[in-house]
Image (cartoon, rainbow, N blue to C red; front, side, top):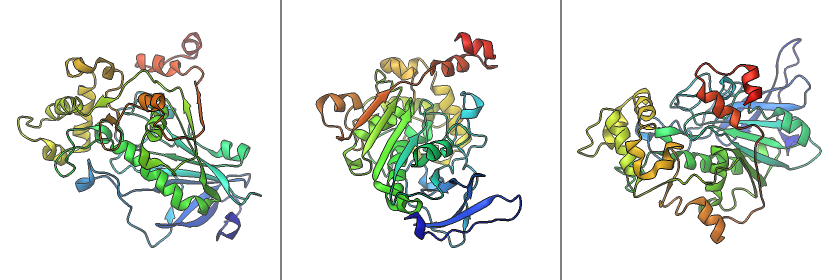
Length: 357
């Protein structure tokens, strides 16, 4: 219950009010909005940094901290070449990017509040869970809920697949497993912010909507959420499969300068993330690399189907009834196509051009 939290408020004239709570990994300090209604905690690490030996590995627990961690600014976005409007692009990127934001009422008459868990879009290679666009304060103030938004690994670092041997190969779906790991974090920590772990709704737009569909088709997620919302779900785009994905991964490795006539995974692990990103950007528009999976040109990076984590295409799961059985809302986002028009013009769009599109 929120009422039993130890809350420290700063009432210095003109100063930002702060609030401190304790989660399972340590104490964090957030901020309170000027109307004293919403507390924001930005840049909470929910997993260990996926760097060095943890690159191309499943997420693991963050090391606990002993002093109070300031969670007042967004964590950096995951490595990307962002083509979205500036408001949707992270101002800073880093391979150490597994952070989440929490927005919660400062006070509430309810003992346990519903939790809304947001997954950003961006075609699985761009975007992040922070910034003004995904500030959950207004939703919290209007609906009396907890909002959680997360970063997850994207692009090559989040979704390359080379085989099923986790000791030597890239087993893929790292970004998806980050999402699952963050949901597990919510289960452990929702009560700290006044939330109910039994009332978690996952929701997302575009690739975030696809992520919702994927999570619904992973049996290991049962119990982590109770409802789902898919906004602008591109159901016609199939994901890469385990039998074909390695050929594309090999193209990325070759573009990165690795010798692909021998196992190349260790070479990829020694590169900088900037080198991997440059190779990933080059490979994603390679028509020949996507010749057998032409639709992958529209979504070069995505979860891999035919793996232990995801055995079938999400639409197959929905049609045969094997997906997790929870209430689902499906809809479209108005004028979402404007973003694609924006990407087509390197200098951006004028207001009149946006209105026409």
